[in-house]
Length: 153
Image (cartoon, rainbow, N blue to C red; front, side):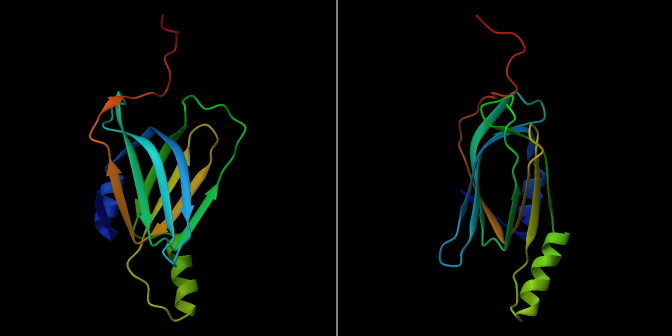
């Protein structure tokens, strides 16, 4: 497991191959004022899209989490494919967090924002966080999405 903060988190997350990676699960944990958002996914290892790794991304000390989830669409994979993701050091979401917490006269740590759009449903995920801890399996597998065009026998 490796934890990335602020600029290193942005660099790491923006270097990943998000398009057609598969999101299986989102967990939002609220405990002891240390809110976490956990994404469980198969993350592609390169731009070719043939191989991926089981990955858990734990966003630590979340100050904002918003999900706009749409259901009722059959996905092309066994999970929801990711269309795009980007991570930034400034955004309207970070500005909103700073305004709310600034009005309470609470000094905030340096934060980053990750935004994700999902392919099949157009769902959106936005997280403003202090750090991300990444746990990636060492085993590389054949990527399972999208499925083959023709059934194999």
